[in-house]
Length: 335
View 1 (cartoon, one colour):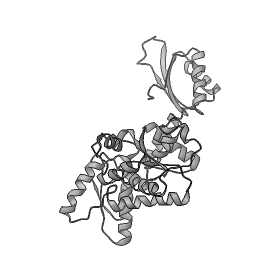
View 2 (cartoon, helix red, strand yellow):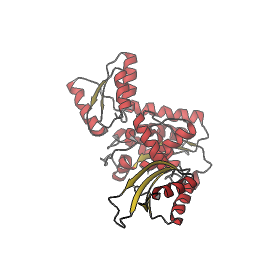
View 3 (cartoon, helix red, strand yellow):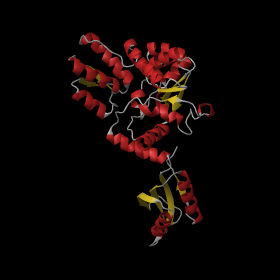
View 4 (cartoon, one colour):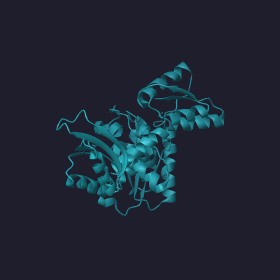
């Protein structure tokens, strides 16, 4: 487990007096690892991702005579996830669409089974990160297969192979599955912090990420519908949260970087900063570079990072710089 399932087992193991061993990958957030240890679990860090951790955990069953509990493919675990679907129907009986994050497939399998049993016309849609689209790969192959895994903000969803039990259930009940980018996930986290005052981890925010403007579920047929999005996970490292907020601000055009060419004479940078001040741009960082500009010996390049109010503000600032004759490279690292 990258952490959430491990935390659940560790907590209940402590409450019930049952020794718990959890195997976590090296990319597991430190906050989750530390909490598991505080709950008294024996924590083993093994594997580059959840798939490798799972392989190692299975060796402990025979070696240490332990009972293995899979976090996303154990039938009782899938059934437990189904209770979320039951609660959704109890609390929001008029629901039209349920959007569920997908990792190993256990959560969406349980929820989709419950939702479709109680209200067959309700759509159930899965969302997974581009950097680990294992459910999509399984759908294409008709069975669980290994998908490529890259480090993602949605660490809890980075399962290289979906569970066979979970997949067999989900494929019959889930209407479709879409993918979201790291940029969309970071923007969703920022929206939740600013608008809902909620701290959610990357995996828990993928459902919202798909629904935000420009996302794969930003569709006309969903406008005005009753959509339920479980925010399933709030364990995120403080340091990661800081980086995510900055990436979210950048995705929202509220943090912009650019290069501008200015005179190397006294006052050259002052004129540039005056324009930034006149445009109400707050300078977060500025770096003066002489060595790598070869257009003219009396010209230098300045890298600026500025805080703005959004896309319209960014467009106005860019145009003001161009109108004042500044050669600029706008957002050179954006994708």
